[in-house]
Each structure stands twice: as C-alpha cells, then as structure tokens.
Image 1 (cartoon, rainbow, N blue to C red):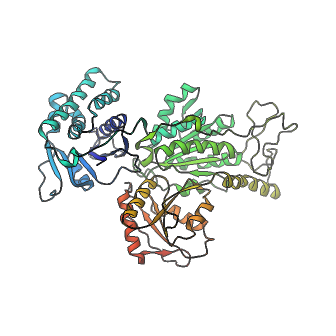
Image 2 (image 1 turned 180 degrees about the vertical axis):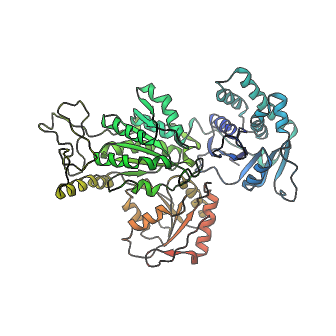
Image 3 (image 1 turned 45 degrees about the horizontal axis):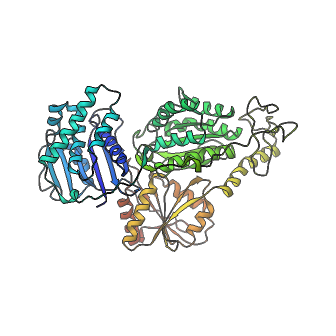
Length: 601
C-alpha cells in the first residue's frame, strides 16, 4: 500500500479545516505528495457541515481519491453524511462524547473506534482543541509514517501569532491523541501495511496561492480587487508579497472599481491583474469590453463558484464559461484559459500575462473553488526556464514621425506607448476609433478596426493555442474535460484501461480560441466522445459541437455533468463511462439527431 486517504468531518467552527491543513503540511514537509479537498458552508459557525479530505502518496496524484481509509467524525451528522466515503475495511473514528454507539448492522464492513475526543481535549486543554486530538489519533494509528515531530512543528507554525500557552495547549492535545491511539487502539493490517518512501523536496500551496505566485513571477506589479469567496486568498497573498518587489495591492470598493483600476495601471505601463468570482465577474463585463476596444493588456481571474446570484459561495462549479467567452456586449477578441490543478494554476497565470501582453487583449483565467482552494504538492520550480513576455512598445527611434497607436498591421498587433514616452501620446478610448485614436463611425474604418482586433486571435491561434492528450492515439472512445474535472478524467482513463477499455483523453489548454487543429485531429477517428463538466448545460460540449461542425461524419456525444456543489471523483467518472459504453441507447448524435439525453448526477 503506497497511499493513505484521510477524511475529517464535523460542523463549521470545530476546526475541521485547520486540522486538515496541519495534517497536509506535516505530510508534505515529511517528503510525501499530498492532494487535498475542503468542503465547508458559507456560515462561520453553526449546523453547516465541513469536510477535509487528503491523499498522501509516494507519487503525484490528480485527485483526492474517492473512498477514505480513515474517517474522523466529530458528530452524528458527520457520520451520516460522510460514512459513504469510507472504504470497506476502513476505520471510523467517532467522538463518543457526541455520537451514540452505531448499530453493527449499519456498519458491518468497517472498523469502529469510539474515542472520547472532547473529554480528552478538555483534560489537557479545552474543548476547542478536539481537532488537535483527532489528528493526534490519526498520527498514532499510522505511526509507520514518521511525522510526529513534524506535526508538532506545524502546529507551532499554524498558531505562531498566538501566545505560547495556546501553542503548548494545542501540542498537548495532539500528544494526548497520539498516546491514546498508540496505547488503546487496536492495530489493523490496512494501516500497518503502509509502506511509503519519501519522494523528495517539494512545495505545498493552494491553487489561489499558485495563481498569485505566477502573477508575481510573470511581472505583475499592480493588483486591484474586492474580497469575494473563493478568490480572496489571491488578494491576501499579493497584499503580503507585492510590496516586497515594489508592487502595489489596492483593495477597491467594488469589482467595477477593481477592474478599471487594473486597466488604468496597465495603460500606465504596469502589468496588472484583478481576481473575483462569478458575481464580481458579472460586474466587470463592461470594463473588460473597454480593455478589448482600447487594446490594453489585462488579466482577470475568475475563481468560479455555484450560481446564479449569490448561489453557493463556498462550492465549486464550472458555469462561467459562456460568460467568459461571450460576456461583454458587442464582439471583441479575448483569450480564455483554465488550469487543471495547482501547478497548472502557476503555469497558466504566467501564460495569461504573456498572452495579454503579446496580443494586447483581456485574458480570462477560469479557475474554480475546487482547484483554487485545494492544497497540493508541486515539484520545485526552475524559474530560469520560464518564458516571460512583455508588450510590443513604441520605439520612436524606429518609428519616426506621427505615432499611430492603432496601426492596421498584418498581425493585428500595434506598438503601445506608455504615458510620458516622447512622441507617444495617444488617447485610449472605448469609442470606435481610427488608427490615430480619433472617434469615428465610418463604415469602412469600422470594418477595418474590427478585423484588425480579431486578427490578433488568428495570430494567436497559430502561435500558442494547444491542448494535451492522454492515452492511446488509436482509441475509438474519447473523453474531453477542462479545468478541475481533468484530474478525475485522467485517473478514470487509467481505471478504464485496467477494465479493458481503450480511451483517450483531451484537455484544451485554451478554451477560447479553441485549439481547432487539436480537436479535429482528436475527433478524426473517434466513435464515442464523452464531455465531462461541473455545470448543468454542458457549456463546453455545445461550444465544441458548434466549433467543430466541419467534421463530416457521425460521432456519438455524451455528457457527464455534476452541479450539486461537490466535485467529481475518478470513480464516479469511470462508473458513468462504463454505463455509457454498455448502454449506448442513451446516446444522442448532434450531427443528425435532435434527441438529447443528458447523463447527469
């Protein structure tokens, strides 16, 4: 056994998330790969349920797994909601102070431990320390993985801003749990057989932190934002780090001010970014159109959550794709990217800045709560290997005479001046304009300028638009994902291989413009194509079918959709793939059949 999956569950305010964070940090700093997932309500305290799942392994994984080896439940509802996630033969640790004894008939295939977690916490600290007792219990059960001292070090780091008394009380609670497990809980082979070697030095960070770091490395020196779940961590990280490199973080009064401040900073020659979630992204749409018309580089991060309106502030969804592509009024070029995991958040943020600077367009980075708030180990980054692109600047020594800001070039890209550049004065305007920035409604000039702006996307399509494939090229079954669903899909493809299915996966690096040539090549010999998304309306699937209508043969398309706020697991994706292959009567064919069957959760 070379991995361990642990799930901790309770109500808001019981320290579920903090205990999971400490556990994941201790495992990562001990040399193991860690992938985490957190689920919590919008209420700070109350009856809302929290859960934290982490997967510790020797090798990098794409997801947090499906079934856990150990489940710690702080109350009865935590048992009721989460026991379905515990594997057969797994260990259930319940707080006997909060949970009455469970009937053996209901839990015959799991190992149950009744531990007075609250009582132990009160004896050495206070009831608030029950989360520290719980991670001590788990650490005691898996003592084959030597992390005891690392746990205590990370407890100190976590509570460093508090008094020494608070720190020591939490360490005592951890030690009490550890000693209880070591002396009073029976050992079982499913944990005793864990054999894991350390996998070397690495970083652990959340997707939001990786986005912030990517922005810093890309050269971002101005960030403006307004706090919103689940994107606020980006602003908090940059508030600490930007001033260290001479940058500025501006907290604005709302999202409209945030995006326009970023546009103003970029107009002034500084790489700039803002980040938000769905409600704020809606407010930004008009200003994004301004950046498009004025051809000002801009990066906007949308950490998606369940909508519409306030929706599900702390839950994940992939329902903003259509808005990212089509959200502004009128028509104009923009680029839409989606990171698949934490490391990809870093890489795609650098790409976002490179593309914004190179093509002078808004770039939308579509993250979501699932990838933005999860923590994951990433290998050490070689910053020297990264390519950083800066905008094509006006050079008076090469362009003597009158500065033509919006020159109608072959690529669509024209040199941009910074205010104060000698001979580089121009007016950046949201009005349609001539090459010399003068407002106009002349039909011929309008046509020329629309085509000039869109020509930048044609240039981009030839220079960087791409996708990645996984699995055998001769597979007749294809599966397409984007963003945070990709990890579950990749693991599901491996599971399908073990069952004798030959499946190839494709995940676009850019969602707009779509990687047309990659898609044509991928779809060329496929008979069945499954598209996996966290939304109700299959937004990517319908975009794909519209964009790839030149394929002159029938392909059976299927949807796997989930929109209840929880994330897809590889097991869920595989089970649906298996049913689709076995029951192809559930299909619909876009090319010649108007019947639609949605395979939803």
